[in-house]
Length: 145
Image (cartoon, rainbow, N blue to C red; front, side, top):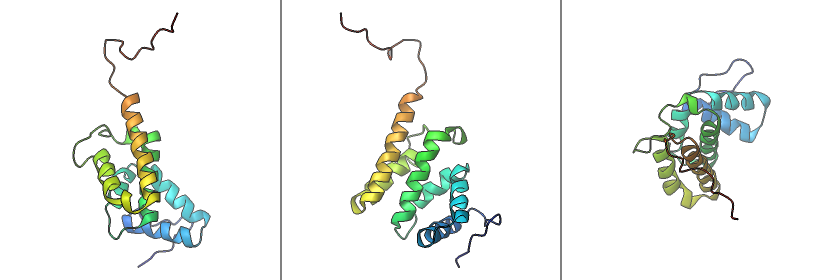
């Protein structure tokens, strides 16, 4: 059953409700749907829910692109919400992105591009947020004479 999103009367953020709001916004864009989806993207629960979206059947290009774009935003701005974002083990956000890229990427260019962009942001965050060491191995080299 599809719910219509009403202003200031948003349904709970569930996978089904977010998917329905996204589908409705593609058919008939309106500010309430945009606000609902934008608010979702700022929630701490969006980390787990978007990872689930990437593996949810049936395949949905708009939903997968939205999930990848949301994770990209989370990686850029909301690392503080996800203490284990550096985890690269199976089951982690990074692992889920890589798996989705291998599984979904070959069949859809939009999904492949969104996931590749998300993986790139994650890699940059891993590099930029390395634990500091006592040696200065990342210092800039001296300019040539």
